[in-house]
Image (tube, rainbow, N blue to C red; front, side, top):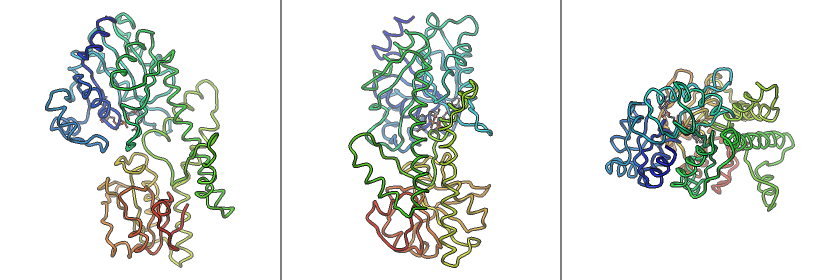
Length: 435
Ligand SMILES: NC(=O)c1ccc[n+]([C@@H]2O[C@H](COP(=O)([O-])OP(=O)(O)OC[C@H]3O[C@@H](n4cnc5c(N)ncnc54)[C@H](O)[C@@H]3O)[C@@H](O)[C@H]2O)c1
């Protein structure tokens, strides 16, 4: 079975299934299809399936033309039905791994996907988990499930973990150019996963186990979370000391070694940096280990929206403006620059806090046309000069490249810049205050 699967991968006749066609799964499915593999995407969202079938993309990094061409060439297809699993040779799981209500890992999407695969599987398949999760998930949760019914790893199926490292909106590093780490439950599983990804990625790094691969991903994202936490704390410190934190970072980053720049902001969002480290601290806590860096970084980063709101309220106060009834415009509600993903976005929390203060809040985001906050639906506004002039404060929360920073600054009474975006755009005015 190992040899047969190797052969199929080598000849690109292996049929690939990508489970979960979101920010990770869709670019991955496209990468394999563009290499000539026949790829089937499986997703529980009928909206996404319909979109793919009609050749349309819903992810900014994947242009519609690429999807349309692959669909019309029958290299990419999509379905809600797991029955197709029995026709596939390799299945890659890219479903969400959120946090539960008490910030504990919620791997229910992975478990549901695995159950559906098992109901429809055939012998000789390779299963790869890409969803970010705590170390041990592949061996402790997936392996026993896949071995149910007398199936044996290495004999009847192969199983590996390969962390996804895609960085939405990054034009330099994409699915094809980011090196891929793979760790199998057995040596043959690692070898097959390595061979498969080798078809679409320039560099594949095999490691000794799925646990090492899972942990490597969590180290990467914990590193980011802790460093962002550090620089956010530094921003608060600089404010007390009356030093410009942005200038401090630009000076520090001239050191050609031993320093890597991170930037403060209104908080962190998305489906990774603020979630993944908590998967790790949760798992560590089961072993009696308390991860202090992770929890501290989470506390500092989660407090940033509140800090932004406090700074704006105090600036309004100095202008004799009570926050109640004030007009607040938030620019950018996606969690980061030039993406349309609003998951865990700090802008959401900023809006929620201002609504609680009974401010009149609106927002503008070219990539997010409407959003729900506290059961209310807000619609993205046009940035007309007359509209800007009516605002008591404009908060730049996400620094999309499409914003006209000069126009915004020239037509606003007060601007709070949480990203130093106006400085980067060369706009300097006295009405701009920054984090
Ligand atoms: N978004 C990123 O930048 C990024 C980067 C690296 C790693 N990751 C990790 O990759 C995983 C997926 O993240 P994402 O951002 O692509 O999520 P996403 O929400 O964009 O996509 C997940 C998709 O899975 C589908 N789905 C859910 N349950 C399913 C099931 N049982 N069967 C089939 N489809 C199902 C959803 O409908 C959705 O379309 C997560 O573990 C995340 O931590 C994400």
